[in-house]
Length: 186
Image (cartoon, rainbow, N blue to C red):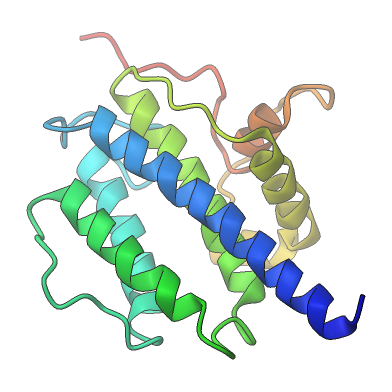
């Protein structure tokens, strides 16, 4: 196999992983429909704040730089807004050269979306399973880039999780989430 074939295969795997994370976020959005004020385990706060964070990351770091920001995004309908973003984003990322300077960014955004999928689903008491392979690759990538993530504030205060815990729990703990977090009872 040539280097070009390896690069294309790697890009396809990266985009496939990102798509899985985006699909998990869509599932979390459906689960949280009509519950924007539900508290989450995320430092951003409630469901609405987490959604705005995810949308802002995508707008600022991907959609706008790629010239792919969808013109008709229903700002008050999170599921439709996310669908419009994803529909515009993946064709833009598939263009030649689009991933050249964005491989690490896409990996980090994949993990961010994955963790926020958990945040949103936990906020409303739903279970949106996270792909174990994505959790492991996100955990490995975060460990490799730990110093950068700590300086940026992306990790938060780690929660102790046993080393033999499932990848999802280790990933969540590394990013400051208690894997056993439940929505507060009022």
